[in-house]
Length: 298
Image: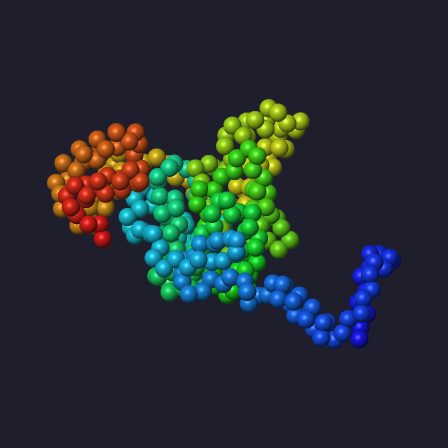
């Protein structure tokens, strides 16, 4: 027989008698409640995953939505930089977090997925890609805690990352990337895409300058998140020649044998109706043409 004592400071609140069997049952219940490494999600059984919460888990993605790296036209410079950085990381050498920012539809997220596939297959590595959704950024420390125990090299990817006026979750991301006690695990690198260079809307930064007591410090605190990314890769609107190069690249890849002069005129008209030229607009044009011609894009 044992006496179980509950106290607060020096004051005894309750004392009860308890037998050995009850002690064992309590211990077993506490053990079941306590998290164990065996119960933490592991990046196993696939090469790409999506982080999901409630409960925390890694959803395996067998068929990743990626395109061939050679189809990404007009972004050769940033493509080569990201491939080199990713190969360094996959080989176990130092590499930087990367922020891919700039014009819409120019292949930022497509490049991340294509580079992962290129490095994974060309080098025969076990490099994994894990996507975390923007709204789940506050749970990033829990995900990193799961990834510390694995030997796999992992690209952690967040698409369309940005923060609004009342959103303070960027502070937790700053701590995770560089400033926290534990920081980023050695086997994890963080790639993010955004239309905003500093991840904050321009009006938010201007508002800070005009309303805070010390505007310089307030603005600096908000834009410093982007400084946690060692690589800033800018994507800009493409020229007409680059746009047509994308069109012809898709035609060659999918063996679409149509008159180039006719396609050129239609492609330029398509871009004028969209008010933009980009990789996304080029792909949408190819889908439209393939559908009209009853050609399957496989």
